[in-house]
Image (cartoon, rainbow, N blue to C red; front, side):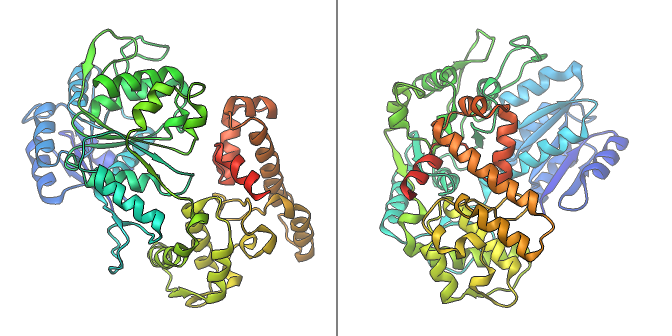
Length: 488
């Protein structure tokens, strides 16, 4: 269970935060002085710290610096009053995760704490290569023995110790984040901060400010100075996932940072000097987009050291290894006791095309474990679209957030007939999900992956589009188009 340490000299604040955040899946520790908080960090090594900047025995900056000396990678969130924001900003420059203003919004705080704990996990949980050793629940494994994966392991070994920018290429679900973590954890900066930013998950209008920070008044709603992620990661590593989704303006600033390690905050004139290693990843074909949607000069800068992750359909021999690993890992999370997959089930899994790659395989294994009646996974446990011969090797959906599997579009009439035959009381919703997939795949193919154009053609907002894609387990990427074309 992850642990949060709250350091505040007001007993009622400690009580409120402990009640609001504790219980369930988070343990909350408290400390009423800076020294007590420092001692608890030394003894317990929490996953995140919530630190008030005004303490009775020392300043917030002093407490922060001493905590960081114990553990430079520990995410620290500052809590401050308006009169003390400069102290929080200074702490952010020194590597604090974020800061909040009093009175604290508990909903915002929960989200911030969750992100800090997840970042801590990414930095600390080893991303190790599969080597036949017994499973260890404390690591995330990169599994694969095919020649293409052996080349990936060699590239990580070559590039990790060198202080160079690395570009990781691969379809969605191939494990780009794991490769980035392996590069970081085997680097000379492994004891320094690691920040991961999904460029596709942040609105285009906010991404530049998120990365580079902004001054007060830089834009509507910028009521105070914010320190950006590059400044926070000074001395460490920043992972820019889905860099192909950056706007040209943000790309220009990233190019300058890679060339000079300098930038200006949004709306500011002060030049900030940093020392940050950049690892980038994308599922876009940047070579095809160079000179158009993606800056050619930035691509040339990124392309020096490249790791290409193969799609799962190009390494079917690794499927049994992955299934074995995923069964063991999923057993722990689902409290199941499944030992293996039957030869018939494995045969179906090997014949399937896996457009969603390892992430889709993980979802399928988890689905099968939930539906397994005994210790062996049989074909009947697998999602329906994997058991259907017409769908093997073609485009298929990933599991939805509700754990269900909408069928591929070719099977929509069959789906409706089957639901009616079985007397299912949820025909409309399930058929609607399948129909949404047909529409979205067709429009995305026509729009060549453009979010703006797809929204216009559909007559819906980008927010609605993203929500529908998330519900279907789809990603807004050109890869969807090329996979469908290959299947046809």
